Image (cartoon, rainbow, N blue to C red):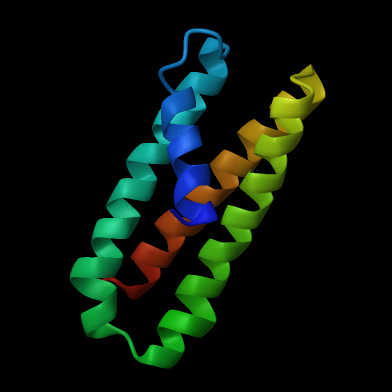
Length: 109
């Protein structure tokens, strides 16, 4: 299993973990809903409608930035679940979802 897949599965599992604070679970659930729509969009539309250059230079690159930022925030939060690290994680999840939403809007007819 790739590290990316493993990381995303950790986020999905945390969304239902009663030991994770409710506001974090809620943010994870909201992120997951957008991420699922984004992944479906990439498979259904983006790979068909976009050039390879658009996919790599815009979609993949921006999504990877959100992935990296959220991954770092998640690791920090797991190591030290402080209010500050929680706030950074919530912001990273929100930013990543916003990026994915903007990409879908940008390239959808």
